[in-house]
Image (cartoon, rainbow, N blue to C red; front, side):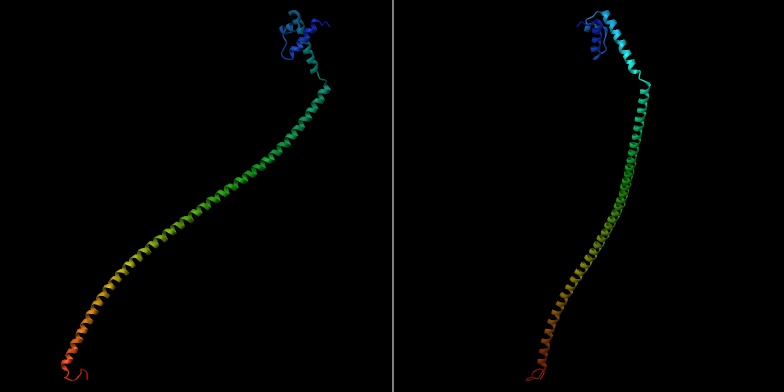
Length: 201
């Protein structure tokens, strides 16, 4: 089947337009026609494409009205759904914000409570330290007093031991003198008593 020059140019233009915009040189090479035929029929092909586009764009008014109503309905429905979703999201956000504020308030209260407890514990600890220091000082004073009393007791013990030793010496000396006096006394009695009589007869 022999195709005309116009058909070959139109077929080449359609094939080329699938990838890029057809030109006179690309159509002429693809269709195997002269430069003049490629220029002439490519112009006709472009004009037909433009006319076809114009016919497609010329939509009937009734169809345009229906499309407009459909678009308006779709837009209204989409707007309503968007408003509902926005309200739901806002409600969730408000609740989350409220919960977060409550959580923050509780954390702040816990921190304040912990700070008060820490200060109270520190004060109690310091009071215990002060009491312990006072107790240690009292014990040190008591130990010092006991040390002094112990030294005094030892000194008294040494003095008593010295006195006892001195008393023992005096007692021994007194006993020795008493024995000596008794001997002298007995000797005197023997001298004084008549002969043949025992002393005390």
